[in-house]
Image 1 (cartoon, one colour):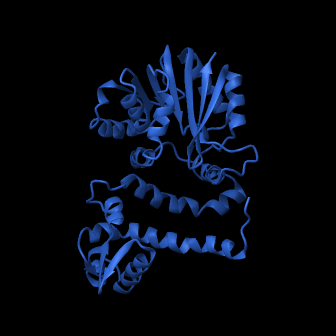
Image 2: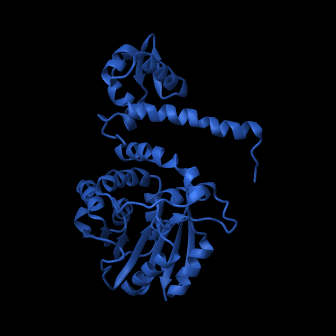
Image 3: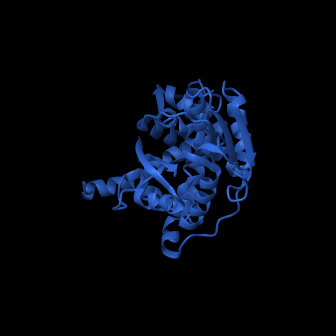
Length: 325
């Protein structure tokens, strides 16, 4: 493991400057106001209703960071900034933009929460859940195909996707296994987004939807495959164990339970993404945390699962497959 030297330590902190500049760009809708045009700082300031001096400094800084282009005294989007961050682009990542802006305020509370413990969280907010679901769909493009390839190496049958948000992973599974069907169980606000996204796909007719709380709704029975993607880290051990028992009862003998998450190694410091995610869970959940593979397998064994298989997806994410025995 490489250790930070003094300069690296300070440079990490200084990245806050770059982060805040990019956050300001999102806050003032720089990429949307520019669109496909070249604007002076004066014209942009007028559109954004901000001070011209600040506008010019911000735009120049964004050029230095590689987020904008400058020709003479005019500024324009790059291909990437227009594609992902201009609201008029078909590929606009509205969920990701929302989540980054939302997280900025939450992370400012980190020092206080480390000192005094978790703050009390509000009940699930539909106004938050909808853009959050879009963000999860936008993130899924990095993992959906390799995850589906892992799952479809065996017949999938009836798939229940628990807390599956936009249904992006289940949709990719159904694309690869033409005989599979899926039931997506999540909050109403998430299912509203899922239905919009899935309506455009060829697999939409093979989906059913169940709205509700995972601890309260029925998962059904005689299920072949259950997908539990990025749910484990939301809850403590007792809560996960309660859901594992429901899942076990709902599966056929020999049915597969697929868990996807940021799993830690036993030293709890690797991989980096999973270690940092521990603090994310401290900020954003009432009881959640990141788990090691060994901890997770112990919980699964306690429920009656066995025949484990592990597969890495990348960026700290992994799959654990367990079988009802």
